[in-house]
Length: 186
Image (cartoon, rainbow, N blue to C red):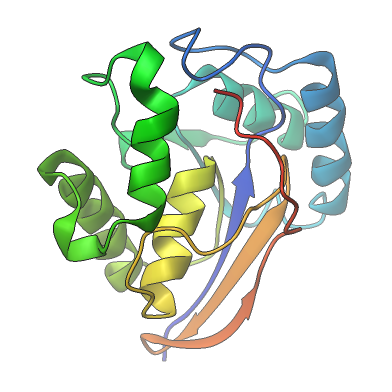
């Protein structure tokens, strides 16, 4: 019998916008948000596998949750934000709006590949994880789990926790993170 508990933590508020800075760290507010979440997870950090997107804001969120890197963290590019490097920064807002409502079978190939990589990980995961990642990563996984035909499902707030409980390959419980209409820092 295998059981997994996956805690997806959206990074804290970034210090700069997604379209204006390629890899911003956390803002002062983002650091506070990460600290609050870290305090809530303090009893799990030592016994869960810790994993982070390679983006600075996710790494800084994990560093705070991990109380100054007491435990090893796997940096995994699978959990990086949605691929958009080839999108003109002046068109990113429109592009992301399209991606939000685009049926999954009509997504651009780079986004399909990114999503499929996440789904493949979820289908084969074993063990307990705390993962610091991004708005669209969390949405892609939850949308898949719930059989949603579009990649977006909800609006996880900064440093919110979304929890997935799997037993023998089947979803047994899902707890969505705080659903707030936060602005994605574009």
